[in-house]
Length: 225
Length: 92
Image 1 (cartoon, rainbow over the protein chains, first blue to last red):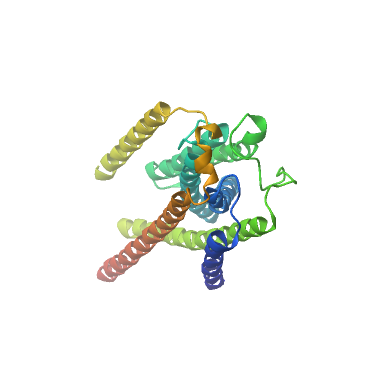
Image 2: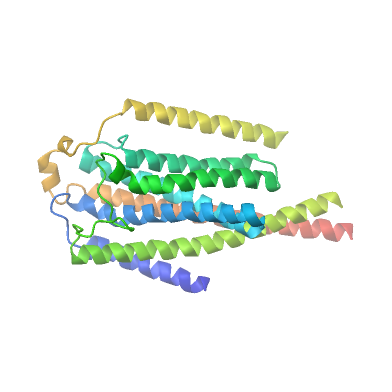
């Protein structure tokens, strides 16, 4: 399964790079910088998915106290930091040629920055707490706060006056999208590519996290005996 | 004691980075406005190519960096397993 996902990730990544650089037409108003869209939006999508995975896995962990769910939540949070960082960086690089500034305290950007802090906060709580269930429970609460922030980010461009472009994906996405046929296909391929890559890395990280937990148990056993 | 000190230093570093970041961002407090960008720059299709390359470079660099971190962690875990096997065999 993982081998297939890895092969699919590599193949789709190459296809996406080809489509973004060679195949898709250049947008007339924004020029070449609009192609950042095909990376930035899928990263945003994965960032959202991650916080939902962290939130749901944390709730199930709080209810069942099973370590597997905690491993899933931790792995998703770690990947969430990576993807949230990339959303902010790619957004800033795109903002410079389009808005003229690297950063603006726009509602969408600010709520995304809050999400980044929530992810970092989750990992900090895990890092600073003593081994055991207490730190996991505290971190689960932090994850739930992050899960509340996710819909706020999504709806920010509807609720507040924002310079950020309108929604392209999700249930509230505009039906009369500005994307033409080739642009839309490239966007969908990029979305699928990053989703496959996320699933692959997530599976690898969860497995590694379980090994880390097992190793901690063996360390405790060895130190006690 | 050592882990506590390193965690404390980690927390102090984190708060410092956040504080400095907030200060820098506060100084660059500008509302987004497309009018800030000259029309000539917007109309030149290749003017912003460097931004596109920068995005791809950064995305790939961070992905590879993360995979490198994972591979190092895996190596550490293998070393830990070998060490634990040795300790257990010595005890037996």
